[in-house]
Amino acid sequence: MVGKIIMEKLFTNFTYIGQGIGFMLQLLAGGFAIGTTMGLLLSILRHGKVLAFLVDRFVSIIRGTPLILQLSFIYFSIPSICGVRLGTLAAGIVAFGVNSSAYVSEILRSGIESLPKGQFEAAQTLRIPKYYMWKDIILPQVITNVLPALINEIIALLKETAIIAVIGGMDVMRRSQIVAAEQFEYFAPLCIAGVYYYVLVLLIEFVGRKIEKRRSYAKNS
Amino acid sequence: MLKIHDVCKTFKGTKILDHISIEIEKSSIFGLAGPSGSGKSTLLRCIQRLETPDCGLLECNGKTGFMFQDFQLFPHMTVLENLLYATKFLASKDVYGEKSANYLCMARGMLKDLGIEEKEQSYPNSLSGGQKQRVALARSLMINPDILLCDEPTSGLDIATIQDVVQLLRSISETGVTMVIASHDLDFLTKISDRIVLLKKGKIAVDVHVQQQKDPINYLKRYYT
Image (cartoon, rainbow over all chains, first blue to last red):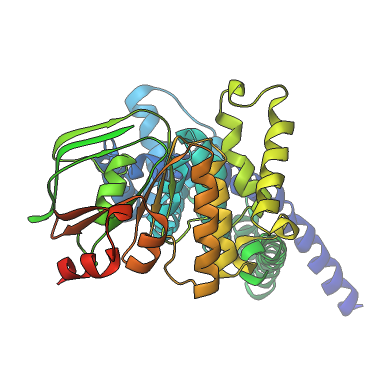
């Protein structure tokens, strides 16, 4: 009898906390999409001369301040400055995206810089236009080389989405805390949240390995 | 074909090229000799516009192709893709009729001439040094250059392969391509070149028409030290 009640409670908690997964994945997908696109752009701009300084400052500031501050800034203080209020999800996606872009741009920069200068020159001597040089010659090699670091960044981002709780986002972590506060019981809800996070991370790792394997053309052939 | 007039280049206070003037004729094979650090590669890179000279003029009537000392093949593309990629951006008038089909024929033909047609689907990392060399040569020829610049084409190759490279470059030159070859290998250069300029500390030490010298190698060696 007692066992059944415990099982039922556990199940209800499991589904209640699990309902935060969709929200969390939206934050992750949106954040990572913005992060990689913007990161890519920043790393290429940084390779040039004109905007390199500005990009450098931007990356430095983003990396030099806590994510929780950036998120609060976008959600709480932007409305008071320009009157535009973003919803929880939108604010989260923007904050995580901008934050991630700084790290992604650093990852890509290291990849671009580790490529032999001759690859750029070879493209130049073959009269390949700049856009195609980046798209077909440089970036495919860079992405293969930095893939492990990029997967690291997705995993870090997934776990960082828990910060969304400070602006009231109902993600897995926040839900587990609500359950804990209602039932005066921390062990089970936190374990449940932990399992959700860990399973998702395992999934990302699995997919990442598959992609890595598929792209390791020249290393083993 | 190619006029180099009073070209200088300085890197961090060191003079690499010191007022170099050379005129190179069409369809000739021109050798650039000299010890390491004499400025051979820098001069080639200036001609290709990979470096900008500090002063002087470079006049070049035609398209240049460049072969790198370390090949710089694209490792994520197969041999055939390496050859064909750049042709996408050429105007179709370079080859008659249907553009891409013709370039494919041209690439396959070139690989066959170079004896590596069975490697067209291989990635560069699986090739030997000599094979990479050939792919690099073929790739630089795919854009139909009028002048081919080769930086140390024999470095790291064995004697038999060097002999092949000599044959190859000769046959390319016969199609009317002007060649500028930088190498520290005097034996190789005298075998292939019509004319050799020896650079030393960024200056022209000697300018030799190979046919007019009885023993060009020993003649050049005197200027080496």
